[in-house]
Length: 229
Image (tube, rainbow, N blue to C red):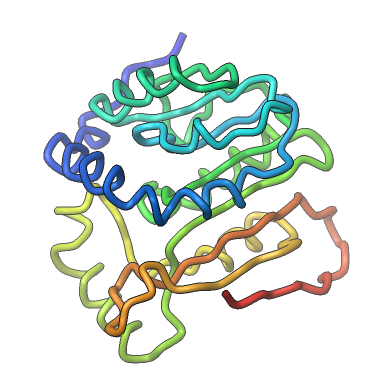
């Protein structure tokens, strides 16, 4: 039985603002979602499914999506989106520290604009590695730490002050690629780009979209194919 989520997962004001804003940004986000999910097969777990905007883009080759979402308002919206999806989607209460999934039971895991806000990214990535079958993929689409020194300083300042409190626990300056590698994943492919690509970059503009697989203990560091969109 799943345990109810703690109050730390309840962000009613931010959840409603996020749902409103994400719907309006969806025409620009949809191509990235399709690219993120293209070619997936079998059973998939999606961590932090939000209001379920990924569901419409899962290919028919996916047999089930177990969509984990801790925030009650967003989970309700995800349940509505699940009923309209062309693939079988089950929405459950849960968070990254304890995925309600058996060991080595899913073909792929998906994170989409969520690793910025999980309280413990290392624990969430360890859980993802636990539930993936051998050879399974992590698909990720996340905003990340900026390379630009000025934007990086802005991010660090925001994260140290008000941003996480008003944005549902979001952090703008997380080294997500580094965290994925530290968790024992091999980055297979990653594209780096700015979204939205506006004249003056926002703290949340630097993004990555890519795939990773669990690397064997003691395996050599592989070549990483980096694209810049």
